[in-house]
Length: 198
Image 1 (cartoon, rainbow, N blue to C red):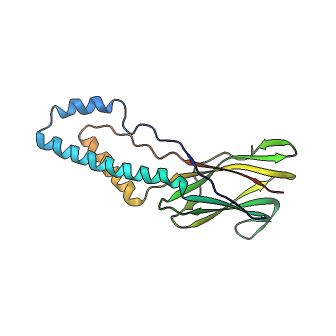
Image 2: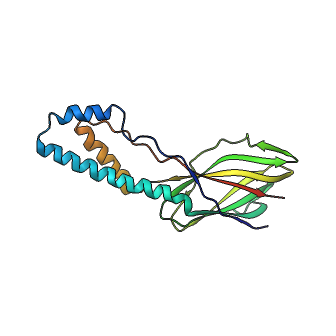
Image 3: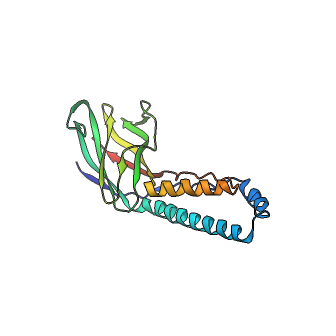
């Protein structure tokens, strides 16, 4: 049984980028800078935050560019090996330009009239990489007599090597001026699904 499920993610917005004490530190340090040093620092900060803003904006739009398709249940895993249990298979398609780490969050099974949480594994936002314009297969093991599956995929935008190096260089430059900067990684985009697996 094939079932296509189009979903949109619920984004958890990242917290403040700058440490609360950073603003007070900047005011104090700026008083000792020459006009040329202030202009150079301002240009670096504006350029750096501008690029980070673009990256985060791309990450936020990614939740509208990923589709999940339930492709059925078998006892064969992604490597073609038969398993002693049933697997529910899903195919994720990345139609956007962001590279995403595809983790698996909450999982529940409906057995009879009761929803039973999966206690054999822990949710993780990290997993296989889903590249732009690419597809990725994921599978969930089902207990016997499961009729419905409820789960959520956690898609975390992953920076490129160039973005990582730029962020490190910006952080190093700001530290030279005495600015404490604590960047936060993007929060995962949550894609909930619920399918019949009978």
